[in-house]
Structures are given as C-alpha cells and as structure tokens.
Image (tube, rainbow, N blue to C red; front, side, top):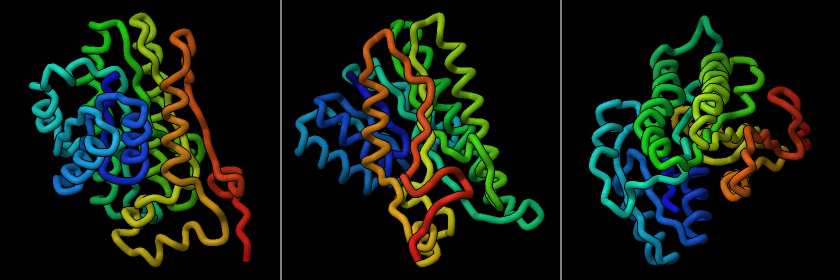
Length: 251
C-alpha cells in the first residue's frame, strides 16, 4: 500500500511512518522542516528498504497543498491510506486573554489544513473505490477544559468532520476513522507553550502519559482490520487519566 502521513517529522506522525514502513509499505511523508524530512526519508529507506517520497510544504497553505500533490510520481499516485496527523495547540489562555495569532494558527492547521489535504486526496480514493482516511482528533474534541477553548473547538470540528466524512465516503467504500488521544508526551506541549520546555514537562508530572508509539500502533490496528470492518473512532487515554480534567498524579 501507499501511506500518506502529514506532519511526519516528529511525534505521532513519525512513529506512524515507521510502523507502516516496517510492514513494507510505500510511504509519503510531509512536513515543514526540510532537513528533518530528508533525514527521516533516508532512515526509512535504509532501514526498511521501502520507497519513500518526502514533500515539504505547509498544510495551511492551500496552493502549496495542491502543488505538492498535483504531480506525484507514478509509484506514489494511488494513495491507500491518508493519515491526517498535522495539528497543534498554541497557547493556553482564557477567551478574553487569548492571542488571536494563536487562534488562527490552530484553526488554519487543525481544520483548514485537514480539509485542504482531504479535498485533494479523497477524489482519487473514490475513483479507485478504495481507501482509508484516518483523522487525528483528541479527547479535546469530545470534552473541553479550562483555557483550552480554541484548541477544543478545532478538535470538536475534527470530530464533526470525521462523522461527516464517514457519511460522504460511505457510498464509495472508503473507510473513515478518528483517533482521539488523551495526554501524549511528544512535542505537543513544547509547541503549545511556544518552546518553553520546562513548562511543557509539568503537563506530564506525576503520571505516565501515552507516547507516540502507543498512538501509531492504534492507527496501524485500525488500518489493518478486514475489508468489511471500519473503526469509526477510538478514544485512548493513559491509565492515569479519565477525561480532560481528571487525572491521578503521584506526589
């Protein structure tokens, strides 16, 4: 199969690319950091002996998305699985104190970026009458939490889009799945806190969070069910977390 993974230069996206490469699939990795893409492409090719295409672009830029996928090499044109992984949180503030630049960054990436990529890739899946779209949501798309307002709103949008996509893709035999994690220790909190690593570490103090491999394995599991089985959604949490506001932390 050919697997397209957005936001594949770190965290969940990177772990997902590895798990599919181990299984011998062709991989398309995308991201905004060319040096990371180049290094990761080389690693996947050398370690797993698979074909890898790296595309450097920003999912929030509609023209860049369209250009990136307009002239794919023949070996990568038939995309079987799209993993809409690119997403972020930026800031943690009340509505009345929020940074509008942070808001726009989350809306542009988490909603519009997912839409741009899906709109570009889905028609090919429909034409071939096969495919699977896997959207990275969040428990924040199921609930809200203090100061999470805009991030939660964007992930609620992903939840709604996932359900709508499932209906739209149903007549064409295309699977649609959302993966909704609780706390996962990746670069997520570092990005949210604008590079403040000390503050980011505090988000996971006193408990064992999920890691990128946990989510990659869940994505892989949903993608490898029999043809007649679609996993509509998965909510996955650390054992120490019950929901967005209740977690047990050791002193």
